[in-house]
Image (cartoon, rainbow, N blue to C red; front, top):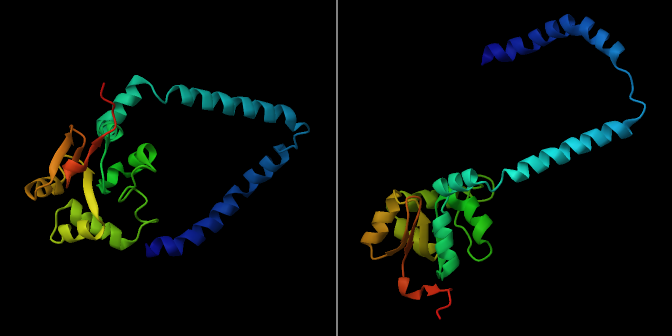
Length: 191
């Protein structure tokens, strides 16, 4: 590291001397463009075409399948059919997806902006609960958590189930564990 600090400026001086003749030649080749309308039109067409190509790739079966393999889309479907009361504790990895699909109906506990939006205390509290470290119950009580949406292999799942919480939804990506399942209401209408 010290070598880079000392040698960086020295090498920069030598690099500037070596590239000076090249920049002189490039400066002579640089001519002002007289009419930018054509150039702007071409750039705009390329941008529109690029956006159109990207939009056609958003909801292909491959991208939907890939999202279902990583994100809690099944749990979100469950949440759309049921009203789960209380504050949510969610996996850090699911935060952005849940904001996109469930805000403002449900508010996430944490998401990938933890280092900029949330404080260090919240991140510590999240890790305490997720890892089922001592004090997890106090943290859930402090934040009035009524249910959790986390990965099935999260350490807190088994601890919550052993503490009387109930598993109301499960797939290979996510579990929904509820403290008081009797309060869950279905949003589907029965004939």
